[in-house]
Length: 385
Ligand SMILES: *Cc1c(COP(=O)(O)O)cnc(C)c1O
Image (cartoon, rainbow, N blue to C red; front, side, top):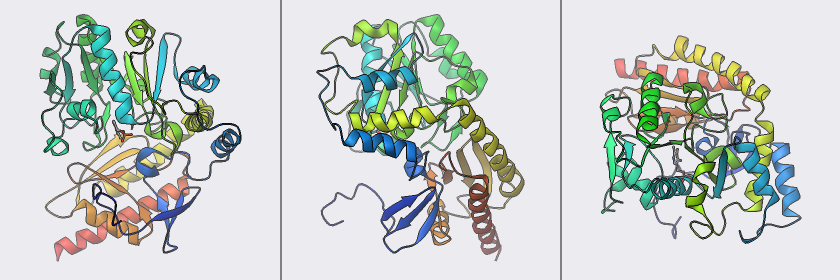
């Protein structure tokens, strides 16, 4: 990778082929995938409906500008929105959050946004400025002004929500920040404070959305009704797409010329998204929930008590196994699991993060979890010696 900026720490192999929930590298080694990209390929690597939809679009037209009507944008917006919501299409999670940030300031006529420590919203200036992780901001100051950080799941945050605030942005489960699950009562208090003070509630569902936690949006399980929702990752199963969904009452703040993107809402990504959303049925989601029970039983019964594990957090197919940093480094565990033919991820605070494709069978899930148990168990033996 001689002429590529070294912005990523890369493992020394290239994934060149995929089928079902398996990936094959350039050395012909095959892995079971517990990553889905990073929560992207929830329907795996050979989903016929998505593939047919993209292939059929490929033969018609790839790109038009946003100067014309788009039946495909209408279709996906209808699949995503309630009656009182509108969608804006873009290409990534960070762009969805930029759109949300801009809309919230313009619609409210106010500027200050409350965000949370350990939150992650993306890498462009607005979204980076909203991200509660100093490591990501090093060297890039000054940040976008008028952003206030509070501690997640901490009641002190509620007192910060006053009529002067434009918006609050949060993830209901902080993904990159360590798979930290929001406390339902706390989230409901935040929402109530937003409502009482005329503050816009933005929920970033870029990682948690599109079935990842067992419901279409994770906030459903916390009984929230956000004013703005942002999506990306799994929406296109690997084609670049993001979306911001907001209340219809904000329409006048996002009138013609007020925001835009050349590629946003492109037809290839939308063709993939229609394939994703038509399969995200109540039956599909209840199957994800039932497989999740098996997964969480195994995690609680077989993995939680291992010596190197301090805690397990998450919901549905979004899992964080917290490893004792005095005993093991998560990147060593990831490398050992790769040797065993399993791909996994990390998150902040030495967390082994699992985001398997939602289509994965119970047998495949248990096979992967068995490998994790074996590797973590062998670490215990090593640390005892
Ligand atoms: C990945 C992620 C983003 C950023 O998405 P990109 O497509 O990488 O810009 C934003 N918010 C959350 C919660 C994410 O997990």
